Length: 317
Ligand SMILES: [Zn+2]
Image (cartoon, rainbow, N blue to C red; front, side, top):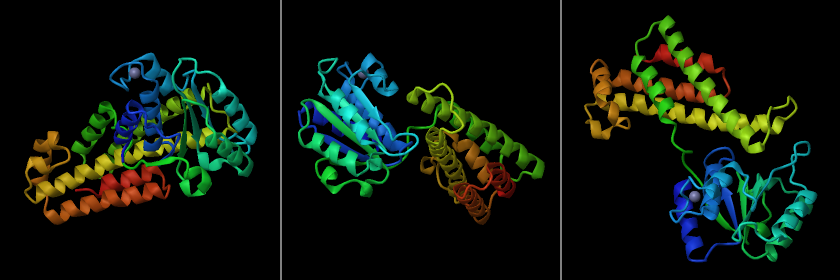
């Protein structure tokens, strides 16, 4: 399911008093699964009747991870494991009375990084949980969790995309795509540069979000955990931009086959797409899609972005 579906199911559980003690939320750590966890927390802490409203103090504190009844545990920087001493500190907090008089929640970020000792300490807590407490185990490797932990939790598998691209980014990328096609080498490079500027803004935003949530002012050189998270979050967003490009060229292909506007992903741009497709043969339109797919594979293999983009914009007709 996607993050929204998970939040709906979860809200239903809160309303009917049928929440499980723990949830294993599996999926991309810096993508849709993390967003799902943030939505679940907002549903838990929201003080509005339309939960989660996204506006109230509860929702905001859940998003910013500053809610007094929320404990967020991440692997230690040096050892990269969630240690038994972290589990003991977490247990202390979970045994205290709730500040807001409601739920207390604990997120284990990268829960697969529990070692034997900390996993056993956590299992004991899960076997005799304090009242009104909820554990969310966020992981991209559920198979690495103790089966005895998993069996006490409900599993939520989060697939699909993270939250939609901000409209401003979508518009900028669509603007670049509108000018693409049949570009000479200089124009191809200019279009690649404009895309690179957009991607730089995306990366900045990813860094801001990760740092704010980690409570860090700057990323130290040796803080590999934080840099890795920024990189992972950036790549999730970049994937969405690549999907947007793919959808654009698939739209051109559909339009080249004479499909109507309703069949297009970017139906709001149907006029531009159909005008461009008018000058394309279906086989050329198919070659364009392949060029973007090639670019996608290059990016997955960590080929330089500017090279992958320049080649793609140079290849599409
Ligand atoms: Zn709210």
